[in-house]
Image (cartoon, rainbow, N blue to C red; front, side, top):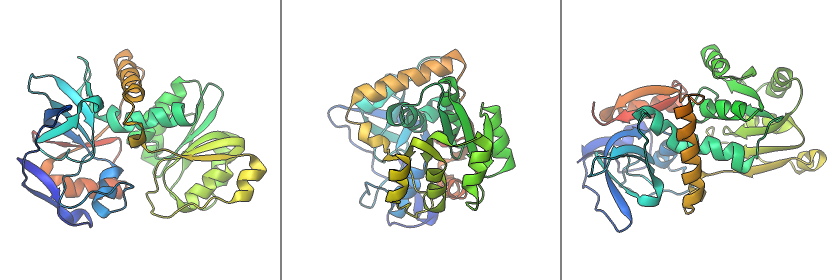
Length: 315
């Protein structure tokens, strides 16, 4: 089968289009003919060796797919690699049948990034009406969905984005205020100005100075959930800041929910229903051919994409 293989850890250049052995179907698993493979920061971290759960080379990246089963049903699925290939084998408990009326690209956008946004907001941060929520990369895959989910829950949404076009997109998605995140300098002041004061909840995925700026923008008893560190710079937590403000910082990694079918089954059903009802609109981003995986990784890492980026195996 055609697949993208990583034979050594490195930059986008290590992504190689080749013939790769077709995976065997194990008990409790499902074989899918891949239509779309989501492109995520997790794929980049797997490729460059910075993912929390590294894979031995050679491997096929891609933790999220939409495909058809042997009996013709559409499924989206989560996994640990294997998605950038014409055939994917996934665990049945991490495969979810796509309802009629949900477009392929929309369904992929909901799978890894939609579930991440949902559980960041409602499982980890426990966002409810009346909260003021800070959402970074608000025109990206996770951020664009988080803006809509938080707004629908009755929260005030303060969105961060690095360009004027992305900030405009965040406003169109429902953000109450937007912040220029292109520079970490004086970022806390810009957040406070846009929000009209401190925020009660925040998502964080950058690390370094942005982490500290976000922590400083939290209200007393505020909480922050960290789900990435795209700069590769740790945000060391100052103990005095936590103590003085009774603030809390937690980490969130979606694979920790994989062993429990209930969590993801419920959130996936809720996300599908929200799209069917029309109030949640996934922001579909660029579509690449399988052989353009290097370009997809480059564009995502350079923050040139908006919305959900995918590889289309039919192109």
